[in-house]
Length: 391
Image 1 (cartoon, helix red, strand yellow):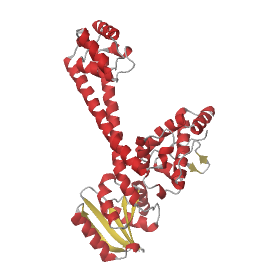
Image 2: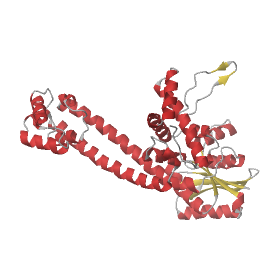
Image 3: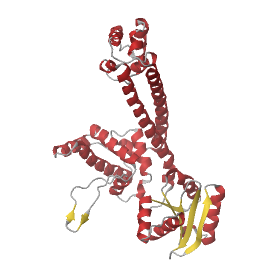
């Protein structure tokens, strides 16, 4: 058996090839992150063995840096294994007391790890094609996070320019409110606005909800407002609202693409009440090929949601906390999905109520619901059956 360890970097990768005794067959070499470099890798592998079944290739999960080499190896039908950097780091430290970390050492450690057969699950074609969906769901996650920060800025700026506005409307982020502030970005400008123009603006953007009486009320409030008249702050408010509107369009386009991909996949996870396309897609893409997990607990550990354990001598910690060392995106998707599932599914709703009745904090109770949800997702994926809610 031949073991190939590859240490991934941005512009070049380092490789070591060993046999099943750990003896180096092809000494450390570097190859570029391009077609010429990839072909050099194949040449060196072939110099050690031509038998595909006797070749195992390992590399660390390094995000987008490893995507191209994984696609290349997947296309060539090599048995490829993606290792958790936490595992390789601990494994390297266990080999020597010396504090040694180089690209050559890392490549050799990866080769030894796949030779030891620890933490090994072959990187499948399913995992590779899920990368596109993962990239899209993470992009949406970042867009939504940026939009949330911009909305906080709007609230801050309104508090400076027209602090009384928030008490007049049900929310600052309504379409009509944005239209109002884009046209009149301060209490001073609203106070001096033509009533007919102000009324029409509010009527058109609120579908008739904001009447002429409301326009009169908001103008009168603006006339006695303590808000500052600051042209620079008004300009910042207009620009921030424009950025939010542009961000809304980007989020909508991204969600349409996610929905198109996920509906073609027809995953059983969408049969669970409360899990929409965006959250379902994030869960599926972050987990990847679910068949590489032997049980639901390993998925929880992958998400960083398994409890830590500490026991030494007579000391046995009874207040274990979540490890929080996994995918933050998967953790986010599972927690938010659990909240919605507990709202829409009677079984999960009753389970949450039971945990709350035991005196558990809401977030702790939701974490229990997350574990139950992961067990359900794992079982549905294994059986291929849709979820049938109990009456």
